[in-house]
Length: 456
Image (cartoon, rainbow, N blue to C red; front, side):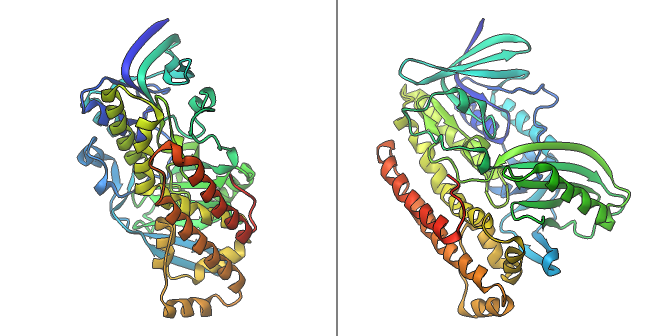
């Protein structure tokens, strides 16, 4: 069996993996990305194609490298269609926004990582994780183009996506690594690239539409005025074919899609849960979808993945330099993720919990009663505040939904409390058990207030 030796091995050529590897290579270490797809298909994944905040992405892969994939930089807001209320909400989206060609974006990511000095091994399927007697991860076993191969490394970075095989194979029993991971915490996503004969009238907006179940929604994201990413996301607790029929029916009923042609169909799983409590173990870090680094209310994961990759890459460089890849020495990666976006995403997940227990018509009535800018804050920041005047106006508009809106505000208070608790995220693994116990006490009150089943 052939053996390849590197300072760091990265699993997966997605956003998190490429940013992690480029960060490491820029510091002069030897790093390889192992990718199961071939060189042509690499970067071709199911995605909504919306990209938020690229103006502030890490510099390991320069933004100008990614810009050829930007197909529509004129989008500036969300359009939330609520047929139950015969209402359309125009919701401002903070920060730079664009719609991209995700496959081209993937190609540019890979090229940027190659420019930094990253090796790529395509057609490489990981089948096991190497661990020594103390439990430290020391590499992976894989099959490359049909031949067994072993990769030895000081650090393995898992960017292999949702429900990563590496986490099934590794033994994390004596670590803080989050193993409280179940299918019900994930979403299935399906999307089609659709060419329409005439320009749509909403090419400056990201269009969202609720399905007849609270656990699913449709999206229409305009790559251009005539090239639309049409998709559906739904919790894995739901029956997929019934919800996919919602997308098919909506496409048939929308006049702008008459005579349209479908060019590409893809599906994927993505986390709609809080970020992993800890994404490190001795010699090992998980990044991006493999660590729950996705906004659980919108499904947006590119920005979080890019920064998780940066933080993991920088911590890997330090660990290799220190000759210390212990959980303690990798821990700062966890704290940087939680400080940057992890606590906010955990707060947003509270609203997902609420949605599982609220009648969809009541939920849509509530959303229709909220001011658009405040709804945007809730969707992207995890918290929002309203003046007395706005509260009064919302109360008048929401007559008939006061029970639901009272439940929402009670839940909002708990989400705010949870975000505050994440601001006290422990600075070392030793304090993790006590922090987790206090966080779980808050979540118990979330379940009691919402009436939802426990998610974790």
